[in-house]
Structure formats: structure tokens, C-alpha cells
Image (cartoon, rainbow, N blue to C red; front, side):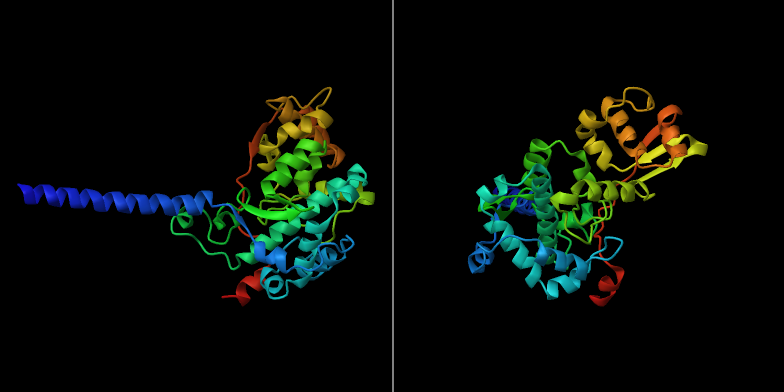
Length: 308
């Protein structure tokens, strides 16, 4: 009898240990732990260099093609220019930033988000699937990087900040510019195309309009299926539809939208379409469907082949 109790207790303890270990693995892979690369920033010697986008522009020219695809393998092999720009983001004087106009500030934060995303990818490249996350996410995906948006910290203007804070607590919270959602690139195929030049304040409006046109002209982000009476939208426009209400809520039409946010999104899109398609969105009855988000890495196929 005592032997049976001991065996039962032993099995129970082993199961408890196994479950605790799995819970720890799950936490590490799906939640992540707060991290900050002290060594990288401590080794940088140019925090106080005059700020410019020159090094970032060089990265984009060399490693991003006309379709926004990135040669991550080559960038990982030659990261000096990207590292230089990341250190310059760290060293920007807040007083200098405050003197910029709003367009320049928005451009700065979009570039910061996109550049820091490039850094986090090459820091973990080639991306390996976790023990448990591999069952939930694609192997070759930013989602395999634990805590990528809210745990991994970077330095911008001398302050620790995450990608989530840049997007939600800075760009979305402090500026009324919903077109950021066609410019921020989280290294996934479902994202907007990564522009192969930096955003700059003096031509930000033109650049964001160009990004918007490219976004709606991509069938993977938007398409009209007239025969079926459906309009397919990127999930981005569902997640952040509320951001478009203030600037794009229509006075009339677009009644196929189920909410102010959806109608505003449809109105926004119509501004970048041929007249016939814009008229369809405004006047015809159809169903709005959201496309599945593609989380696979926005990587050039040639570099994928080279690293196998």
C-alpha cells in the first residue's frame, strides 16, 4: 500500500515538474522576457553624431528591392550602416527633435520603427522556430522572436523604448496620421511594402500617398470581387480602422461598411482608386471581408536559397 502511494506521488511530482517546465517554455516563447542590449549601445561611440538618414538610406538602397523585399542574410553579414543609424537614433537630442515640424517627427518615428525591426530580425537571423511556438507560427516569421514588440527594448533619444511603444504610444497617440499603417513594416509579407528610401518630413505627404497607392494596388492587401459582391481588405485596416475615422469618415455613401471605422477605411481607399472602382465602393452594396494576414518573412527568395 505504501509502495503504491509512493509511486503515485512520484508520478504526480514528475508530471508537475514537466508541466512547470512546459509553462516556462511557453512563457519564454510566447510572452518573452524584457531585454536590452547594453553591450551594443555601450560599444557605440557616435551617440552624439549629427543626426541624418544617410546610413539608413544606404541600408535601404543596398538591401531592399523595388518590391520591398529584404536581403536579410546580406544585411546580417554587413550590418555596420544599420548599426550606425540605430546608434544615431539613440543619440538624438530631445531638444533637437522638439524643434522639428510635425511631418519630420512622424517621418522620424516611422523610420525608427522600420530600422529597429530590421535590427531585431538580423539579431535573430536565421529565425528558428521555438519548441512550442513552432506549432503556432510559421518557422520563418518575426512571430518566432519572443517579446519582439513589447519586451525587446531599444534606445531612442536616450530613452528605452519598444516597437509597441513607438507604434501605439507615440505615432498613434500623438499624431493624427492614419497613413502610418501603410508605412510601418513589421518584416511580414502581410505588411505594407518596405520603402527603399527613408521617409523625410519635407515630402512625407507625397511618400505616404505613394505608399497608399501601392498598398491598395496589391491584390494581397485589397481587391474587389464584383461577381461575388465582396470587397477584400487587409486585416491592418480592421485592426486600426478607428484611426481613419477622424480624417476619412464620409458624409455620404459607403453604406456597405458596418461601422464608422469601416466606412472611413473604404472612403480612404477610394481616394487611391480609378473612378469606376471608387464609385463601386461608395454606391454599391457588397460584403466586406478581411484577408488572412501573412506572417512569413519579407525576405528575398535568393537569400533564402543561399542560406540553406
